[in-house]
Length: 196
Image 1 (cartoon, helix red, strand yellow):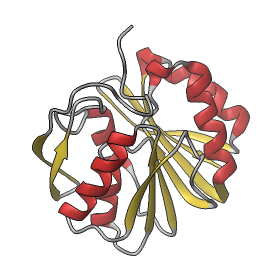
Image 2: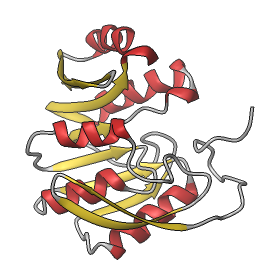
Image 3: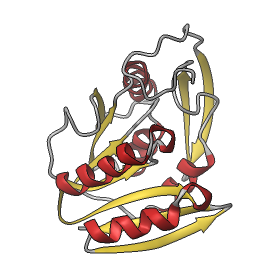
Image 4: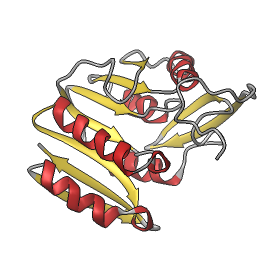
């Protein structure tokens, strides 16, 4: 199996490119690179997740931030919130911070770490498009660590495809969270809100 975007230090040769995307009425110009998730633009699952989110407040964790689209859009839509972004991939974190500066988003920053390793809660919300290819054990660990860093009354928002285990994921999440609700579905994707 070749190297994936969920390695700490991707060995793929740099191949930066500039992309333009818009979501929730906000346009962003970003730099992406090889060795990061969805380098050609905003993927369908993340777009649906972003478009499904209610108004957010307080502190928000963008878990597995990649090159930064979630933090960018949330930062532009909700200038009064604080957004902490994190990813295991050093290249992704560098791109995320560069893209925040490029788009004048000042209420967000990205740090490198494995899941919640280098971030301090508590958070009012955690936003996650889980890296399914890392395996069920790692993904479920992300859910559990999300729960641990949320305030009581906080929520984890995730997007997952039905064919990639949305039903079994919802079943697991119901053993961890107080309430799990599907708030949107489209093209095989489910968006779940999990309340602590």
